[in-house]
Image 1 (cartoon, helix red, strand yellow):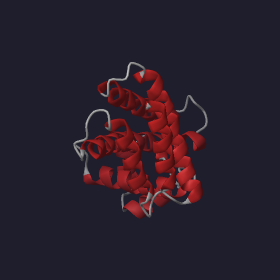
Image 2: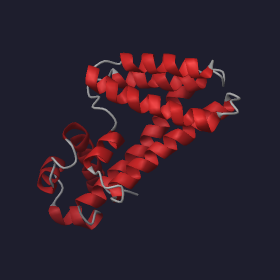
Image 3: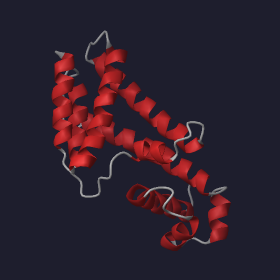
Image 4: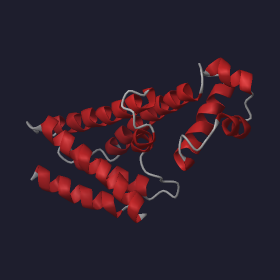
Length: 183
């Protein structure tokens, strides 16, 4: 079970990394904002890189749970559930604190594909594809794996476009393209 200090570090780091970027936020700032002492920080994490990985792993679990809950919320038929992903994204894109995808942002900042943070971000994207494949398979699609990769491209494109346009409209456009793929 996480201690309060560890949880404060994770929450503070996630908020700051998402809003300002991983490299822009140093350990001293994390300690100041979280109210956690340096010794406590190092009891929980070997350093900032370990904290980044822990933040991403925690966000991965929560984000995928949120997506599943959002898709399941309206008790849609299996054939309608793959498109519900884009409805969920539209809600996310409309939030005032939306700054894109923390995992895409991480892969850009930590461009070395062998870095631990990059690997965790990549694994998150693979889990999203697996979930999309699951939805498409449940919808009876024999081409679920291929379509899942195409839907993931639409998801990531919608995320980046929503940031660029400062609008949730990209989710509806991606949904329309996904519907054409399903037709």
